[in-house]
Amino acid sequence: MISQLANDVFERTKAFGHLKEIVSQAEAVHDTEWLLDGIGAELHKWADVFPILMPLIASERAEAIHADAATIAHQLSTSRDEFVHQNFQQAVKLTQLKSKTERLLISTREAWTEYARQKVTPYRELTLIAERLPKMARHLDSIHRELVNAQKQTIDLPVKPEVIEQFHACLDKLETLLSDLEGLPSDVRIFLDKLMKDEATFADVTHEVFEWCRAEGLAEKLRIARL
Image 1 (cartoon, one colour):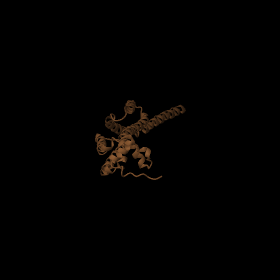
Image 2: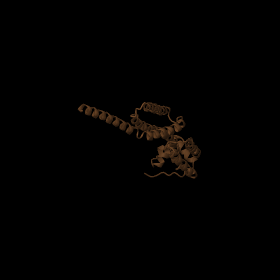
Image 3: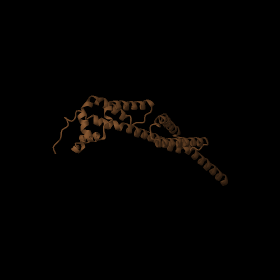
Image 4: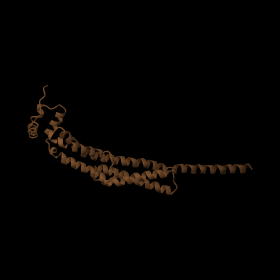
């Protein structure tokens, strides 16, 4: 009788252990559908935009981003195979993969932002010069509008080719509006920059700067301040 009771307790203990294992597996896969939906959506978004951005960003950075995506795809495939074999602990790895896909999108966005800002910076500098020249006054509203539009598009990851086309269209308009200033000699740029900061001196007025001021009608308008 005691032996029978011991066997019964042993069998119940085994059943309890099996139940705990089932509960553990159920907990592991509880959020799996949500994780897979999130990973799928992020990878789909990345796959749509990266081929468009790849020719624009630095090749080394593009290769690194592509390698990260390939690693994620391999790990996702491995997790799928493990799920087929009832290894539900792979759900934990899916959480890690979710974080990796988020970082993949972030690094892709950062690469775009770096490229876009490099393109915008020269026009921003030319705009500062244009703001100091009377002959550019009639263009300033258009210049500011296109510059603001271009700068806005450097922040977020473009999700459609049309967004990138709009960005480059803004740059084309800025190039047209600022075309008269793009060939400014370095001496003139330095002089105007110092002029804006009230740091310009006679030493900055080279022959090239003086001739440019005369050509722009500024020679009679600029005044010499007393120390």
